[in-house]
Image 1 (cartoon, protein in one colour):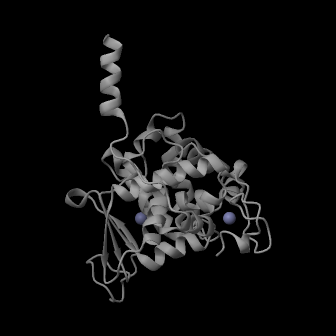
Image 2 (cartoon, protein in one colour):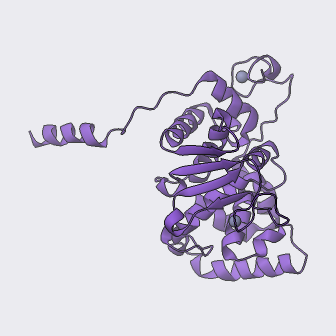
Image 3 (cartoon, protein in one colour):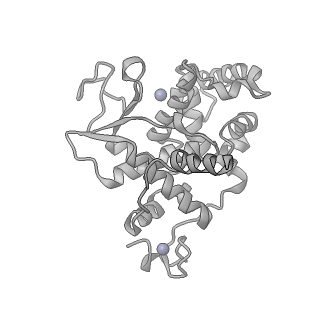
Length: 276
Ligand SMILES: [Zn+2]
Ligand SMILES: [Zn+2]
């Protein structure tokens, strides 16, 4: 009897809060063309990726400034969140309430078009917690180039993970419980010194402070895992155990070739399938 009551409540209150629509075929094609992480997933995992994206989109408000937010914009923003949280059991801290998509980069005073207007992404703190701003062109550029170790949406969501414990310090709370927590800061210091001396392939912005370092190497980790593992094995190991993802060894690296088989598994050529 008690079991029956418990089950009744479980079904009632612990089932999914709202039913999420399955992703349209058009949107799956878009992910196949644009998001290499998705393309490299096994078939069953793609379905999981799609439903997580749908859930992110259903629970997030998108506001455009000088532009209309397209469905593709939303898919890319959702993808960044899903990618970072892929190995986590809970992913609330890779979520935001509102994403503002803007047409132009801005400066620290939120001015567009000034000489120093070079910011392409931002996550809010204090009273702006839960808000994210992204420049539309930078968002798309982040996914269209998989080689430059840059992806602004991944960068900003990494800040969000970092600040989940209350501090933006390049040390997410989850890292502190790991065996490598103590050497983490000295590793960062060492890597930042290398950047400052001009002898690093980690981009300069990572030397700004520990928090920027964490976000910049997260971009590197997801865009060029094999290279990061080869050139920075200890750093790679730390990020691998933090994100619980190991793409240096598992990434198939499916290339999109017009005449090759479509990565969606249809058996057709790519140019006759998801490319169109
Ligand atoms: Zn940053
Ligand atoms: Zn296809």
